[in-house]
Length: 305
Image (cartoon, rainbow, N blue to C red; front, side, top):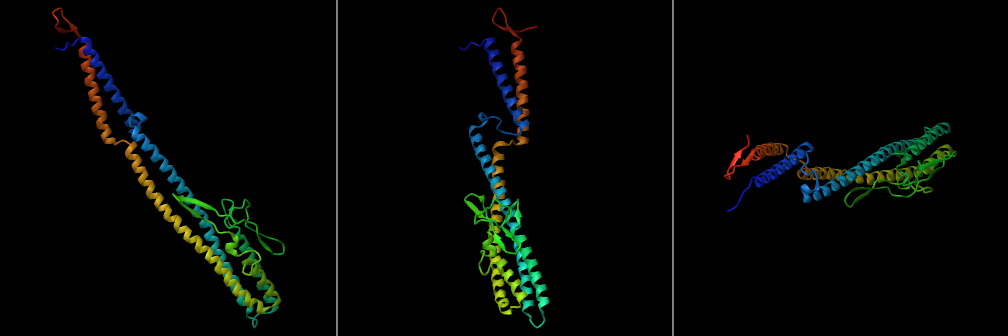
């Protein structure tokens, strides 16, 4: 036979009351915060997984930021490329016009040469296109310019051959730049775009049609060089766009997994809180009833009046 005393009954009732109160408080904390895990002890394994997922989300955000920066850099470059090709084509048209010796005089050739000089100045400005204060064709130089032009019209590359890299995904690093020599030709080379324009200007003024014909071929080579560099960056641009799509999909997946671990089901939690409140109220009533009992001299219980 097990003997049950009023004291043991009161102790058991109080223990149950405290347990129900603790459960209700925990559920209310989850409901108010919206989180299933309010402290590591709520779900140790879930806490570890949530921390891993938060790290993955942060890393994915870093990849996305890097990809956006890469797109912005290459968009600046692409705009410059297109304008460079347009101006170079205008210069080529002027060369053809200068070769029309039957229609041009020395004076008109000088005027054409002046136009070519103006186009060269415009090309230097485009070659110094900047993104966030950095010349997009200057490599990794700390300066703000990729090219300088002296009073005599000589254009010199002042950047370096550094590659600007961006990590846009796991094991996915891309080069987002092309250096000036890769785009406009090496300084001093026969197909350097700026040197070709200088030669064209000089040959127009001297009326050297033979050299102008050779300049026309060099101009075509220089334009092809610019277009090739633009195509290379275009391929990289598409690669980064693919990486952005992957990042977007990964972000949705990771946040969905994280939500399943740490976020509450609001409807389900509301039911649990209501049930816990009902249980707690019942515990209060039961405990209050036990506290009002006493023992008679014959061993029976009686309510305290």
